[in-house]
Length: 369
Length: 264
Image 1 (spheres, one colour):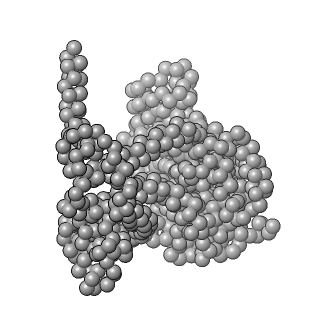
Image 2 (cartoon, helix red, strand yellow):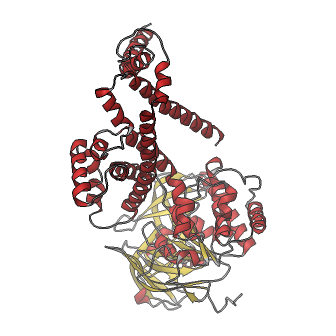
Image 3 (tube, one colour):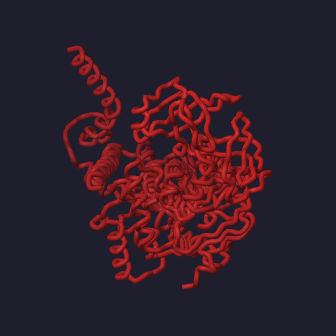
């Protein structure tokens, strides 16, 4: 095996794919490291599935190169590429048993029969599905079908496994279980996963690296924590649930901080760790759970503190989603805060009350679009 | 009480409906056992016509001819029709829509017009000898469109990512066709065959024109018996046989289907 510190498992160079009236993939460059889980995250129609299908060889790129294991594979047909795809709808062969489904790829490679039996057995064990060999896909549950689809591709030991939102059709509980399962299986087999999804929660949970895609372009490629804590653009901030976004112009302050004169009125202070030039800054985002709420007469302790009036409270179980109207805002800006239900009970917050909201400058994330 | 009354009315209507459907067949069946040689009156019970039937070699020859023609037609028309349906569905090209609709032409054009056209075509243009070759080609030309339509209908309900999955797992196009596409199309192929067989077997009009001399199929032979034979009662017997055989076949098939659904 090659040393994958120098050779990426998958590399896309200036990839472009146009359909009749749209550019689905617009000069995409990315590198996937060996043995990691790489997620391509974005809303539907952003070109993520097209990118995946180009890697698989089911679509051809108009421009650019696809490299698998350091070799350009643009002209290699899908059945000779060392990568396999788990389809969104799974695409299990309905006329074949579980066993036959998993053995399908091995048979195409003319693997000896006794070896096929051994490998299929091992896969079923890995998936905790022993005893299901003779069933048909229609006779097993959605979660089991999921794992069969995974087994069918993994048994071929591809260089990279491409997954096209395979969890999307399952209900929440099973999805969460399988998410954990997926991570376990990936660690066990050590195969690189390239995971396409529109679900930021799944992406955060399973990935080593996330690439956020918008309208055919990559907005940010970073580890999950970084994508969540410091989204680079308004689009990502919104997509990752940092619903409080202020637009405006920024100015440098003496000690490396910046202050944003927001269009809504309030001035917002942010720590500029990466020393982004003030000219490039277009806004600031704050996660709802990073903001504290206290009664209106409290003294402020954080760099950012504003008076507001509670406009709406929605109980969500683990938190209370509270919308607070900023008092000195020119456009009736509302701030969303996730409050601890216990705290909101104790302090008897209710709609119409004046409160103080505050957050530290470290929790202000700088946006540049 | 009201409900029950309604049920009775429905029952009566149903009985009348089925009598209308089955009446002629029942009469035919009954008269095939009548000793009247014209087969249109009841004289006394006899089964001798059936014995005579199997000894009349001309009838048996016609039956065999018809079976051969229908079998060849089924094989060829189903294969051609399935492939054409697949192509018309999968490959995008300009004029596809027109081509798809025009496939219906041989079915919608009046048989008699089609028959005349085929006769002229075979004798004056492409010179296919009348008899077996002409009959079979003619039958294929009006049965294949049926297979195309059945295939197109089935294809709309197939999940085509299955073909992609097969290719992704290392199968080339041909293997994918054999291992995945054909099994998926099997229900369509089967129903095409089941429909085309009687269509070819029963055809009179077109066959009459292109049969030439000495290749009378069963329908042609029966028609000539009606006109010239001294014992038209034989028609009743042979007809009953060919009503009962497909009926039994349909019953067997549907019970097999029910059986396989239970085990799956």
